[in-house]
Length: 150
Image (tube, rainbow, N blue to C red; front, top):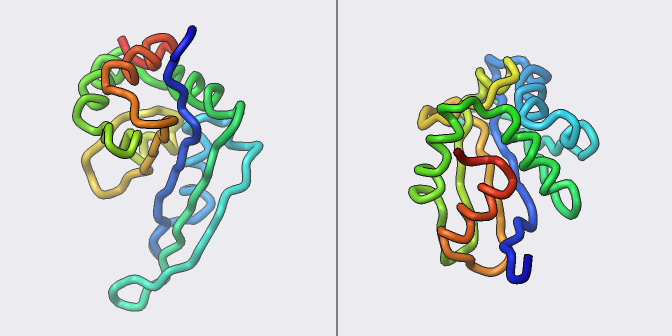
């Protein structure tokens, strides 16, 4: 389709606190789209928390042909309610000036293999970066074509 909006990359990040099993947190991230995320490198950086406790920042970058596959697999993990909610979230969390969509997914649900959007603190952050700065309606249309929204 001529002029179709394209997602260029997906940036995924979360933190594993000292009280969490780091491998379980990595599993939560990979569970968002296992077929794609098992093929990419998981970055880890150890940071120091407010009280000197170690916090590991876990990051994954998806780019190229893996982006569309990631989005389709991510969508396959959304239940009907989440797909309906996603349309609303796009309007609320898309920044047209930067061409970025900011999502927050429950880390615990992701560990269990489900994608549930969350506004809590214990989340996996997913940022979808688009070429240019498409309108929110164009982004919604793109996601409709990929089956992400109902």
